[in-house]
Amino acid sequence: MLFHHAKIDYFMVFKLLARNNLSMVNHNSNRTSGKIRITGGRWCGRKLPVLNSPGLRPTLGRVRETLFNWLAPVIQEAHCLDCFAGSGALGLEALSRGAASVTLLEKNRTVSKQLAKNLQVLQAHKAKIITANSLLWLEQQSDVFNVVFIDPPFRNGLITKTVIALEQNRCLAYDAWIYIETSAENLAFKVPAHWQLHRKKVARQVTYRLYICHETPQKHYNTDYTD
Image 1 (tube, rainbow, N blue to C red):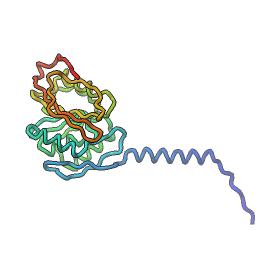
Image 2: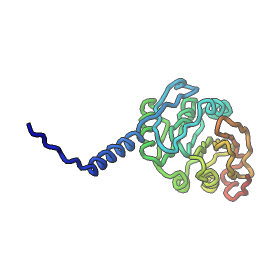
Image 3: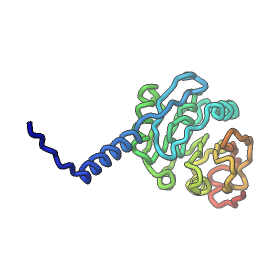
Image 4: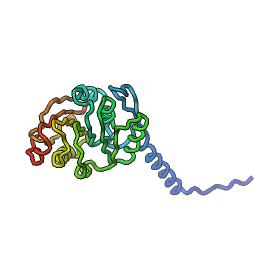
């Protein structure tokens, strides 16, 4: 019996393996990698999937519990804005605890689609998802909010820019509450002088603060900023 030895094209084999690996990476990058758990309100205990996406960092459950204890006097019937929604943990927590409405800004379309699925599961009709760059959207809108969440990807310099956009575009109601989450390294950012620091706390790798804005939108269009 004669055996014919096939000639192996190693270059083609390498290309096929590389293509398959890349496909697996792209596929896995859009998979859900965990869940967020709502800590209070009508959906308390509900778990929702979160995508494995670069820069996506849901606010810790115990941080949300503390934050919404701080917000307990004002969250009922509040109109809320989540400037960097990501997993939607903050906005969904607000809705669960009685917020009148939540506007969720998220520029990543894949993350936004997963967020929409979670809203559908919860039948959260008081939430609105806007797939857009937060800073550009703030320049064009006319709504006013009672509670604002600012929790952008770390080390991107977005906090001060977002604060200025909120001020200049008159997005804050009288006595609005503003939540800011940063890395525990306390990277510098600026807030208006009329924002009073109400609470500040550190948990693991994050520092979180809650401010109260004591000016009406008409008064704080031009303002001084402080560290």
